Image (cartoon, rainbow, N blue to C red; front, side, top):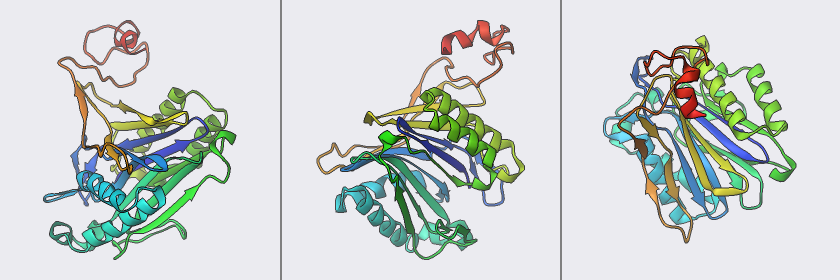
Length: 302
């Protein structure tokens, strides 16, 4: 399991997803597995992420997810039809793939979330799952035979500033206080960086909470779609360690007359470290220079 959080208002849709993979007994396998991407279709753009089964033998969910979204778009490139076709493909694959079938049924659970803006100017969110019932709010302990779709859009146009918050994964670790703080910032239309920082802080805090069960990491993909330029996604990254690699978002162009772009696990690398954890300005810089953070890499990152 993992954790992903989406926050949206009139200005942007922001998605935070952790990169930790754990085994079904809770053992941490890796800390740097990407589970987030960006989808373009004829009448919407959306950030997407998943929680649940990530890898099993030769099956890797992130790769399969990209390819399946593209396959679904070839049947119909409008958002609602695309996700319905994707659910059909997921149901078929999870009932026939030998790698998936080799696992106990409780280990085949998967939820995919897509969040963005429609061409008509509304916030939209879709949840596709084979174990979570988002109408009755029931989590089945075992994977069900069929993936179901729960999709909703804001009743009012995004320009009127409806706010939206959704979480998948270990969402029980998200508190009402977390939601209230984030909601207030969305209602006040705080700058996107302030909202992103708050969302990152919430997920980082959830990582340490008992209810997360150790399944949520502190290396986080961040993604953003701006209402005024939805075809230009912004990718970011937050980490609790110093790194020289910046992971980006997977990309799927499923538009009828699009480029057909399909990019998996993109990243930027540098010879020297350029990703640094957030620390207090008077703390020692995590780069090891011996200087206080405010006199060292805080100057670089501002």
